[in-house]
Image (cartoon, rainbow, N blue to C red; front, side, top):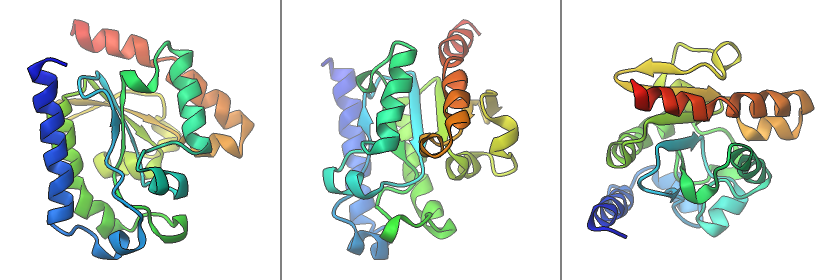
Length: 194
């Protein structure tokens, strides 16, 4: 761990503390076991962003560790990466009660902290998982139309993907996700060359 990584980690820890200090979404916080901030390499080229933690994530404090997380791990392996190589987080950092969708004002409340996370990590590619995540950054796009197609916005490159959970109930979606995922290495290569 060089000093640079350490400062990044320290900055991320400070953002995490800030969410608690600022009392973001107190109703969600009251129902949740803990804040699920993010996990992985702070020096990663790729950040994956889901919508909100579920039950398992809430208990462990780690994003994407349920069934959808297992599929995410498989997809990472399919392109020669592991969870340790990337950074994984959610827009909303507390589990919504009964796994309901995050409300618009809950997403809005967390967005500045998510932006701060991205500013610290400085990924080359932000992979949005599911429509909630996509529409936080690119509100006008439909996931069904743009999945697997890199989108540049305000100097940052996004890759919209379907949520891994969608593939658990739909075999065809599973293959679509694997196909879209397979594009990631070439997208990263292009960004590095540009």
